[in-house]
Length: 380
View 1: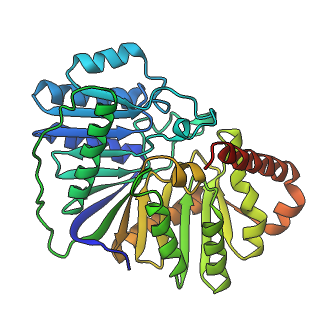
View 2: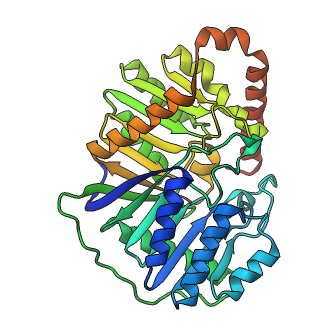
View 3: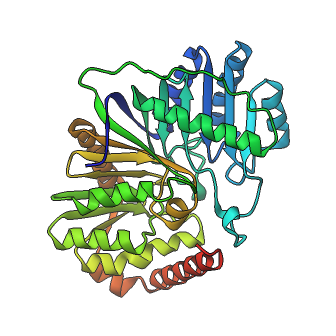
């Protein structure tokens, strides 16, 4: 079993309603510093609330560091950016506004992490961007998504990662880092606390760490694999691992996004026929817009994070997941995913897929072909 850090406290947060309420409360209680990383920061109702809280914190002398992806947050106006900087919030873009459709590897490397760090003592991690739950493609809200609040020793790993990335980006912009030289290195351990591990994906020392963590759990699964993932285009090894698990009698269930927000998302469906023939159960979430990136295996192992199971997350983007070894938390997350299936899931049956979805099958093959060609051109 991979290494886990004991003595932590974790709280599951579902959707922006719970997540942003907790985040704003933590921001208001901050004493020294606030770090935020996000792919999307929208200047909608939710974004304005977060920005107001950050400005108030900065006015109290708290150091605030806001790092956003240059493409994901490209709609943030220069006026808003100027207001952020004028409030003494330290603001940086990760990579300029380069189109991800340019077939260069550097263009496809994005900051996809969604993390918040308060006083190096409390961390938030998950798939939730700073955007309103009702601000979704196709107008089908509210968005379904997950995050977690963390306390305990694992927060130190998150602190190291976020400070390091801020310094790296500030150096690349030839700007002074402004990061504090010292921060709390020893965090109180919670008695009988949860075992957690923070795993990041970057293009240096941690290229395949998140995928390997998933594969280790899948390859050792004995009873059940439950995955809810918005953008699901697994690589060959991931695909084989799921099929092998199903063949040895493990119940494998996938909850995938039913609302196609851009054409390449159709590539997910390229796997339906093969997976269904191997006994893997597939549901599409169609009630609203699903953005989840979570999984539960054998009622003990679970994960929440920013990483999709697709080549862009697993091979290119900066991602971060928390991996949890705890029966109680796994049970809680499992119940939430099952509720999502019950309330909004539509099961995809093999007989229907083979006979009634010709247009979807054609679109899926075209989208998958485009992705594979694009990755080849980008030499990935």
